[in-house]
Length: 358
Image (cartoon, rainbow, N blue to C red; front, side):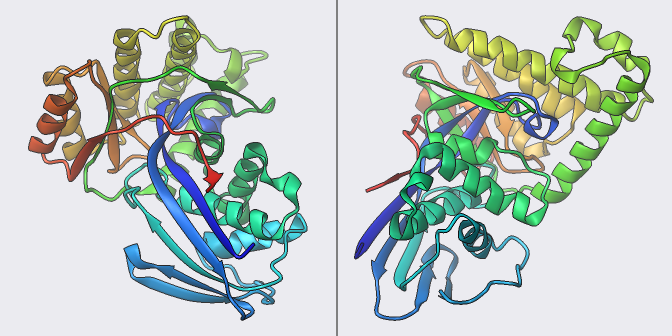
């Protein structure tokens, strides 16, 4: 094709932050902030890539073997992955990549870029069977996580590739459900504090699994996926004080996510209850996993004081963004309150249909 426009949305996690690397379910949704990749075929054997938002340009020879993979170079990682699936570039393109997703703010700008890049490559060079939302999502996960042996899960890539609101079972029996419920009143707000993705994820993942394995040593036939919140005190009795918060957060967030799924499956969505569950989820993220920072705390408090049904940090933590759920006609009041509390930006968002080619 002479010209290709590939679009991928950002995402926010509604329930299940820090759950997917434990094999536990999440509920997330694509949001209508996007990475847009515009590609026009050229007469060279290179991809001439312009990323004006971050003032970068790069040239990639399509015949390069890409044996060297630099840290977080998802563009090259995707080329390596796709080659294994017989998607191999045969001509060059001039490419401009722009976006409205804030960078390093917990709304998956890097994953959206990876999905949009893979979607372009598949459209341009096939094979066509790779172009399904599920396959694009899996390829992006392989490029961004598996290729780097990184600690992340599948939430970002499947949320962006599938779109809508999704329930994702991330464990051994991987599966997903697309939940077509409308979700009004969703607000995203950026703290302006850069998040610390990899180091934070590594620490939380290691400590969480250490706690889980310790419980499993002491509880016969223990399975995390079958653990119940009512039994948490028993489980905690087998743990040292330093590991207790990680295990309690895992069980608590799991319980909240299961309750949220039941709400999303009802004929009418109860926004008050969804907000209450968001608040419970945030409690585990803030008070047990301790992934918030003072500015995030102030933004959450401001949203709730202004009348939000619920609010929570999203993403890996240590900064980034929050999501808040507003009653009808109170969105602007809540946005103003969040901005007054020091947010870099705040805005209403809608649920997006997912990655696509224009």
